[in-house]
Length: 213
Ligand SMILES: N[C@@H](CCC(=O)N[C@@H](CS)C(=O)NCC(=O)O)C(=O)O
Image (tube, rainbow, N blue to C red; front, side, top):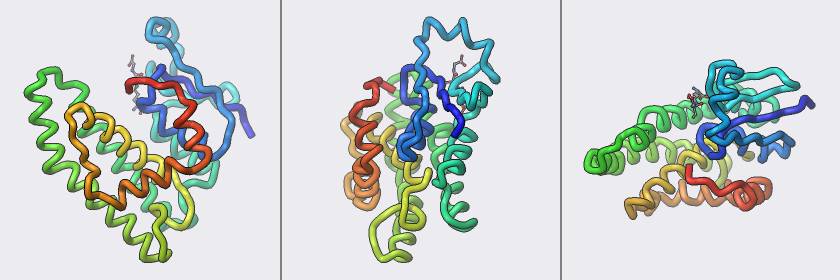
């Protein structure tokens, strides 16, 4: 196995999905967290002047989604055939779209009243659309396997880790507004609990640095 070093800031951010994949796979990696004041000094050394960067035996790779897909393939977490792989990919795109199209607005909008409007629209339109689709995929796999479980097959894939992390981000953000979007969304809450109870993930959630984002 090559040596892995994942460099990011001291945050979950766009590196945490890859960290979750490493942890679930039980694969050792160096979890490097750059203090913000040191970032200007190393920015120019990064392939696209941004983080996360994964070093594999010293060679640097960027783009968080590409990193997750690589790790998923390496550790057998992409589904067991092309059709399962399609669902896994589909849910990875759901994750990316949610983060880049919707959650980013909460971060960039500074005006609190405009932010409240975004929260309202998210609660009434965006979240129901995404969560209904996610529940449909969970339900389909449940019908196929006859048991509550994961998004494809009977074992964890990167789709489970990504959608878990997406829901975690939403849950954390909405707490500030005293909103629980997962109320009544039992299939999603149960899935989150299932991921949180995976032994390697449970250990990581306990020991990982506590950061705001
Ligand atoms: N599409 C890239 C985005 C990379 C990116 O914009 N990273 C941000 C942090 S999330 C960054 O390095 N910001 C610092 C900077 O641009 O100076 C990915 O998913 O990896």
